[in-house]
Image 1 (cartoon, one colour):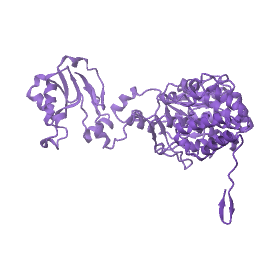
Image 2 (cartoon, helix red, strand yellow):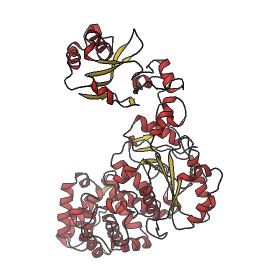
Image 3 (cartoon, rainbow, N blue to C red):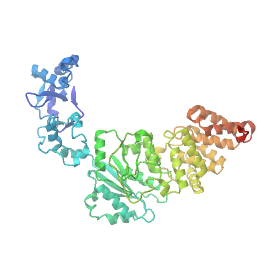
Image 4 (spheres, helix red, strand yellow):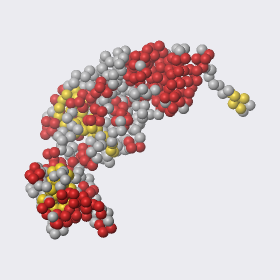
Length: 559
């Protein structure tokens, strides 16, 4: 018993008075070629009509009905109702199943104002028929395009705001904030779907004045009620300034979907509309992205692998607010300029459902921007280290070989300034090693407590300056039991390396043996094998292992 609805049935009026009947179904089509469609059924428990209908399914698929695909779902209930009409209340064809699924019916439903649904309790939208018609791209974006009575009625049920556009207000040298804000907000104002809000997040760099100066711009004036200025009080000189601004903006957002826009991109006016189509057809999707127009950036399909630093997802990629929350927001402990890339990797790592649009963005102003690659805000060597730091946060995405390579990049190429910053940030490491997501969600690591990742990076920096005692001390604060789920084997490998260099080779050998057993993918990496050999030699002989020297003698290589 109860009420059954096909997933493509939209209710328009209450069913309360139908509860007085044993069974209720609606006619499909005009007499005499009509039937009773099973897309809407209301019935009491153990109704006689339902039992008769159910028993008739014993001959389902018989030859005589093979070419009549709707026999058991439409024709048979109509036949049973004709035989015993007292068992069922039959409602007129307009109650549930009008307009019909044929060409004229779909035209009336989706491309006409010629029907007002005054007699409908519900409307069956015939999803299977629509998929094979010219209306196959039906989605919530149609509600804003005034195509038919039904679509205009449904506009009231689209969440508003559906999209939250977060504009981090940061000024780079020689750049006018007014121009950035006007460009970003102007792009949003042109979107065909009007269910949006824009949140300008004050970065403490003259944003308030810039915001006030563009308030009366003619193109923005009709939409100004949808724009808010947030002043979270984030220090412009703080670590991870941009990541903190983004987290504050998204936390205050009310939309189901988020788009970051800083003025470096122009969006086509149909961007939200196209995204709305995807959301309608795949409600489980949580990440929507595309290439950058004009051949500026071709983004690989994430179905084929993770985003790369050579072709990351562009800044205005849409993501659901729930996905942002699930991964703990943008990580603010990274050097500024790589927080987006880290965020996309985290979403990929957690397996969010994604979709690549055919619509492209138009890239504006600069061919290269820090939003595409960190080099504009960091030197080449700093960018290399920053990307290596990102990689170490994603041990499920990168191979053991790749991670050890990044491990050595941080060891060898971090500048003294970066090493000092990492060491300073790690001094307040939490010995309980609390879960980073909770802290990152509030804007990232603060100045009194470092994350496990920062402790690991600081230990790498110490090892890079050959301060192995300091590196081991930092790693021991967090403890090996806490590393496994976050950075997997990386801190333990670093600790073993430092122990080996401190002539605590027996401990290092034991750690290396444990790592080789626990992580078979690590045991086959040449660099790991070399380090394990070094530890064993030092443990046995108390001195560094000799280098392997290959000298050709008479055309034969001898060790």
